[in-house]
Amino acid sequence: SAVISQKPSRDICQRGTSLTIQCQVDSQVTMMFWYRQQPGQSLTLIATANQGSEATYESGFVIDKFPISRPNLTFSTLTVSNMSPEDSSIYLCSVWLAGVIDTQYFGPGTRLTVL
Amino acid sequence: RKEVEQDPGPFNVPEGATVAFNCTYSNSASQSFFWYRQDCRKEPKLLMSVYSSGNEDGRFTAQLNRASQYISLLIRDSKLSDSATYLCVVNLGNTGKLIFGQGTTLQVKP
Image 1 (cartoon, rainbow over the protein chains, first blue to last red):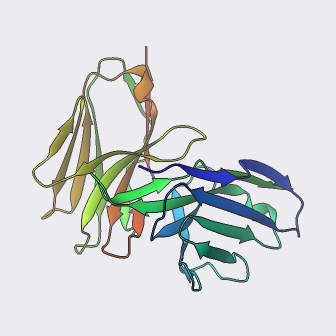
Image 2: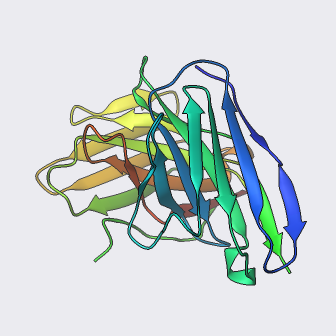
């Protein structure tokens, strides 16, 4: 297993500002992902964070709004840019781990409220 | 049509009851299947993987029917601590991307 941490755990921001969320893993992982979970909804994949290259975004998500960095195999950041109240969500990073069960494991999430 | 569909519930059951959740998926090329559990204000956590042969982990039994594209989760002897949202999850292939159902909420009452 791996220990996955996120910073900040929560934040309250003003509209028009940007917030950068950090995701740190205690071991090297090939695949990292960023999700959004809006209130009362399930998880929606924002993008796959690729080490050394641009992230791969899902339909409906664009780099200008959600720039992602992945400088190495243990760290990634997601920025939520020019925020509006509709961006109020939980943002989660996850990593793919191969082991007894090959699947994704999640960080604790960042709860964002935009006023 | 959603790629992974679940009945959102809520399922309200008494302690000790047996409860079953179902899920259907639309992509026949899906390769692996999971149930995750999500407690309120927490991240999803892997509960168990799902195989065609069925697999059991204590009070939990998961089953996959590839022909019908149907996944189930059975919880026996429900505990108060089983109260959570159960997410049906499908992996499409070697991209590592997971598709999540909307989740089924279970509330176990004393």
